[in-house]
Length: 210
Image 1 (tube, helix red, strand yellow):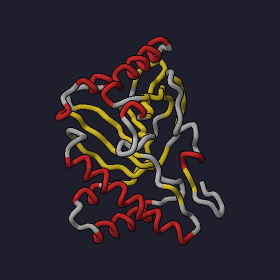
Image 2 (cartoon, one colour):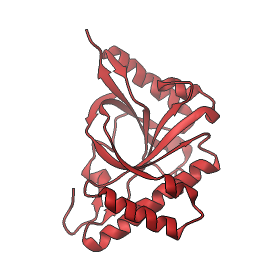
Image 3 (cartoon, rainbow, N blue to C red):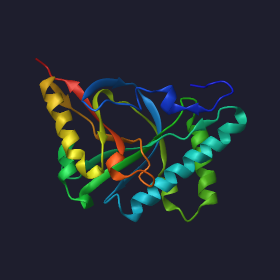
């Protein structure tokens, strides 16, 4: 999607993707392109911070290439898929942080190609050879389909209560969770007090057979 003579802001172009009520809601999302990077372990550790830096470095590199071509865009919000080696679904929230697995995401505009991504990634590798996770950044499309989501307001530590509400809704609607727990970070934790943090929690689902 391209907005002529204006910077594309994905949060405004796709409001249903970047908003959710404070009650569970069923929604649908088609295939979407992202920059991604996989990792594991405690998100407070250096590996997570370096992976995030690598992802944003490539994202801003792509943005810099697109701007002179009148395809400027605002780099989108950070997102994450979460699971654990020995758990699935919401149980991953209660696993040891050392057992956590994650895939960080930044949504890309539809006009970004794999070739443009690779060009930006290699420029970033040459510019920051010390940032090893740059070699692990990928460009891929993900399809989630039907989902149940809810806006979580507050610190990450209180997410289990929101997840319980989502799980009760999924059960009441005769749905079955599938895929991985998805979070969209609407707030910047460096600037937002924990009690005001806003995070969309999203679970892909399928309809149960009668």
